[in-house]
Image 1: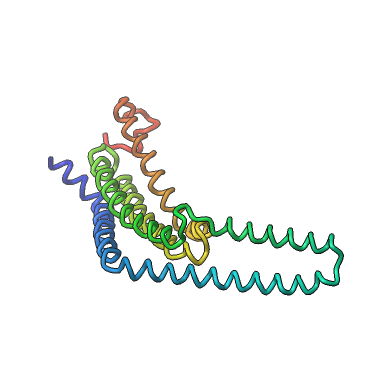
Image 2 (image 1 turned 60 degrees about the vertical axis):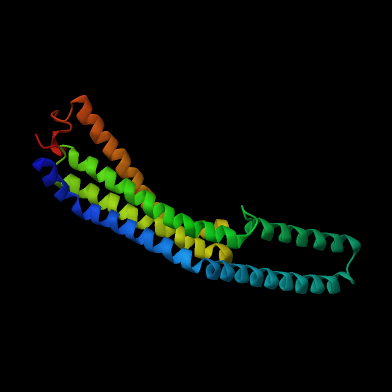
Length: 219
């Protein structure tokens, strides 16, 4: 018991970050619950405003092309119409919504921020307890504390930031805009899980005393 308690001290910083993720998830859930209508209404107004601007822009382009097409050949007029149809379809594809409403998509992503704060935070705590129970040297346990802790704090905010950008940029562009945060967070969490699995496999098979692995374990 004393050995486990001492090992837990090596991952205290990671546990602290995981608990902070749980606190942030709880606060974010409370914020969404008390500001749901305000957030949803703002997203709907933003979506309506963007659609209005797009329609006005397309109407201006159509009026200009119609003026030019009156003096052009029928073939040129047909080509112009086809180009506008393609432009319209491209715009629709960019703004494609899974739920039928970009405002609803944005709210769902904000909610997933809370879900991932809680889920990833709990996962990080459990994984760090497993790390502390291994025979890894303290320096490597501390590394796991940083990777799991930072991953728990970085992954959920990516969903929240994506949610706030969904209506303005469109779902796909919003996803791409947070890859700078989403990518490293996933790499930290997935890499930590794979590394921990490898550590536990080495211990279970009884290879930790072999020269190939002994550098990472207390003997």
